[in-house]
Structures are given as C-alpha cells and as structure tokens.
Image (cartoon, rainbow, N blue to C red):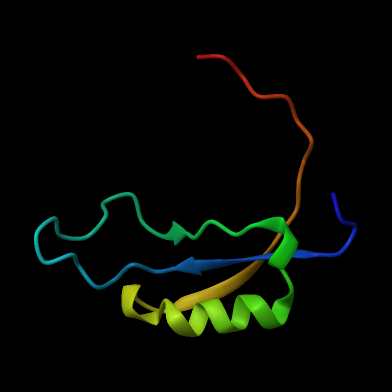
Length: 70
C-alpha cells in the first residue's frame, strides 16, 4: 500500500431519502479506492456528494489491528 496519505469523504446525511428517511446511524463514509486518494481527488468527490448533506474530508489512518470474529 502507498505511504501517501489516504483521504475519504464523510457526509453528514442530513437530507432524508424520499422513501427511506434519514439513516438513523449517522454519517456516511464513501468508499474510496486507494489508488485515487489524494486531497484534490477527495475535494472533487466531496463537491459531487453534497446532495447527501454537508461533506467533510477525513484522513484515514490504519491501526493494523486484527479483526474480531462475532
């Protein structure tokens, strides 16, 4: 994986879906492929996703912790 920072778009989701309403679990983090995670790419994607509510850009940090079985 690249050593460059990885940025993702997080949307507030304050605009309810016409049929399903608002997501009761809060904000949505949009999938981002690691090959295109520059700050500029995240800014462009955030501008496209404003229809879901106010968007912010977050820098992703991997903790490298093992997953847990449920």
